[in-house]
Image (cartoon, rainbow, N blue to C red; front, side, top):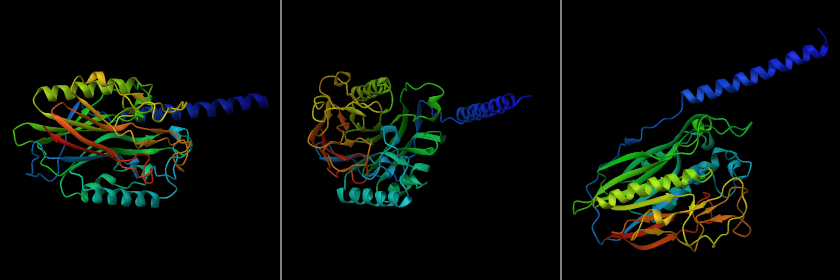
Length: 353
């Protein structure tokens, strides 16, 4: 056998081993894929008796905290940067402390948090959901939207294990809570390592017998736009049904879509990694309010570390949707200049009519 024949056999064997390893990895991920039911009941900690009153001003803060890892010093590979996680767990700890300090000082009635890790390589295994729940005096409920034993990108500094989700903190009594699955455009095999988007729905009784339906959400980002559109439609159908049943509805979070009428404030630069769509107001109908603050960006691109607004891609993709029987008093994005997250928190003040 000649030298080239031996080399060909060796290269062929190496290629076969690589393919076998890839196939085995995909098989393992498929077998262990997180497959939540369409609707799942969620445990609510600390049952409270305090109920909201009609006409009473209420405050909700919504904040995608970027798993306490996407502070101003960071970029991220999915946005065109190179980062996977901070250099040390010290970044994560300092961001958590700063986020908690803000929430404590804000003293909101209800808090919606997105991208809250429980056990993830990207945030050094810190149980962020447990930390924030432990510092809150009211009720808490958590819904998983991302569980994967090993996310095999980017090579070679893999994202690794991820367990993360949505966290709602509530100063009022919560009758029940559930996780409602949202549709996805991702197919096998990429689906196995993708987020499983959902609505975290919490029901707070109101003294007139109705319910305040609180919906914490985080819609698709790195899709072709079809997933976001389908998820927004499912959200609208759910909210309309709840309103028609006589309930008050407030949905808030990271829509990954620009709120209508605000498209020109921060023009979208060409970006093959992430381009937000425009939230379709027609899905909700007459009397519904889509609330976002045009004066402050709610999100920044992670293609590079943040050094100020000048020349940086900014977005208004975080906000709220209110049913016709809920009065919008104000909506204000808190300008924290992305110091501890790639999103700024948004404060909603509202009242039940």
